[in-house]
Image 1 (cartoon, one colour):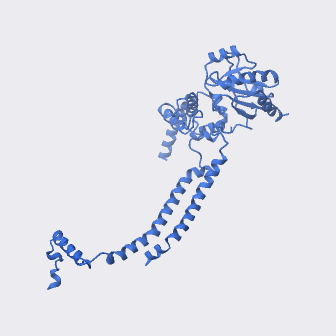
Image 2 (cartoon, chains in turn brown, red):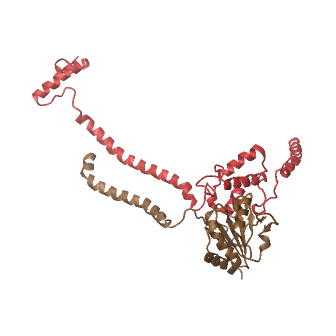
Image 3 (spheres, helix red, strand yellow):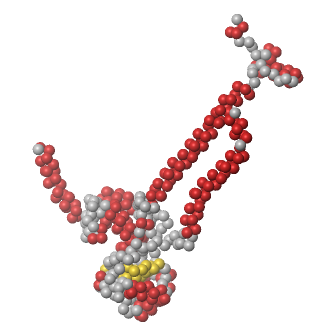
Length: 190
Length: 198
C-alpha cells in the first residue's frame, strides 16, 4: 500500500524537496558569498596595527656607523616619523628621496630610519651614496621591529608629541602622503 | 606535626636554590610591559622544548601560514630569540603570546582565541558535524520504514512456488527439463517431503 502512494506522488514530492534543498543551499551559500564580496576589495596581507592610538614602543638604538644611542623618549615633545627600511628593499630606495626632502622641509619633526634585517656596512654605503637628512638606527636583534609589529619594509610610523602612534603606513611614501600624515600627528596635540 | 616540620625543612632547603635559579636565568631585566613573570624561569632542555612549543603558536609575520618555530626567516629567528629570552626570565606562555599580540595583533596567534567571532572557527565545524549527522539520521529514518515495508510485502507474493511452472506449455516443459538437469528432480518435479506423506 505505501509503495503505491509513494509512486503516485513522486513528482510532487520531488519538487517540494528541491525547493527545500534550494532554500538550505541558499542559507549556506548566501552568507558565504556576502563575506567574500565584502572582502573583495581588501588586501589580505594588510592587518590593522593594534598599536595605533597607543604609546609607541620605546627604543634606544645606535645610529649606523656608530655614535651615541638615540632614544624615542628623548624626542618627546616633537612629532617623530619612524621609517623601517633596508637597502635590499626597492620601494625603500624610491621613498628615500621623499623622506629626505620631507625631513628638510619639516624641521620641527624628527625623522628616524630603523634598519630592518640588513648589514650595517651595506647600509652605511647606501647612506654615503644617497645622502640622508636624518639618522638611521641599527636594530641588530630585530627587537624594535618586533615591538612595532613590522611585517616588512617599508613601514612608517607617525608618532605625535606625546609619544603616541597616530598612523602606520605600509609601502613607499610620497611627499604628499608624508605631509598629510605628519599634519595629522601634529594636529592631535596642539 | 612531623609532616609539617618536614615540609618546612624542604621549603627552607629549596628556597636558596630557587632564588639562585632566578638570579641566574634572568640575563635581561624583566619587561615592564609584560608585568611580573607568572611562571618559573626555564633553562637547558626545558627551555628549548618550551621555546619550540610557544614558537609553534606564533605566526611568522613575513611567511605564509608558518609558525616561527617552522620558519627559517630572520624575523622568525629574532622572534624565537625573544620567546626564549622571555621564557628564561620566567614569563609564561600566555604572557608571551599577549606580548607579541600587542604589536602584531591577534593575527600573530596561529590558534585564534576562543571568544567572540572566533567561536565560529572553533564551534562551526562541530555544529556542522552535528547538523549533518542529524540530517543523515532524518533521511535514514524516513526511508527505512518504506523500504522494509515494501520488502516484507513483496517477498512472499512475487517469489514463485517451488513447483510452479509458466502457463505456456512449451515453456513449462523447458522449465521442468532445466529443473531435472539442474537439481536432479525426476520429471522436473520437486521431491515430496517424506514427513507429509506418512
